[in-house]
Amino acid sequence: MKIRTAKLSDLPAMAAVEAACFPPAEAATEASLKARLSVYPEHFWLLEDEDGTLVSFVNGMVSDEPTIRDEMFENANLHDESGAWQAIFGVGTAPEYRRRGLAAKVMEHAIAEAKRQGRKGCVLTCKAHLVHYYEKFGYVNAGLSASTHGGAVWYDMRLTF
Image (cartoon, rainbow, N blue to C red; front, top):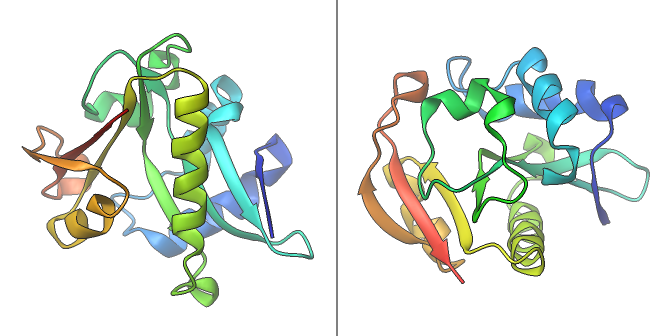
């Protein structure tokens, strides 16, 4: 398996994985993914199997803000390539590839890229049942998030390098 950054031709596969991983109110639409991809394609990390099938991916913008605001999900132009924090908007793995550590592989790659790029760290939001998962990567629970994305309750998670 290999990890690479995304191209516009990856959009249908990414949209399918996104739809399989998140409830409709939380999943990024194909249009939203396309807008993000047009602004920051180098912040989409895709894991493919040997035949080139998209297995898992991570994406998110860069910002000087140490938390994620709901507006960031919809406005790709809030991306600031010189920002201090790599935001992680989504970590998704196709259902048939789950429970093999593949999402962790892509997350570790995204973290390594953020370090290589000189970021201060990574930020994400997650639901309560996933706090422990992200803590395994070194993220610290910063408490309840102001985000109400998709009508869910989120926790701010921060990994500082």
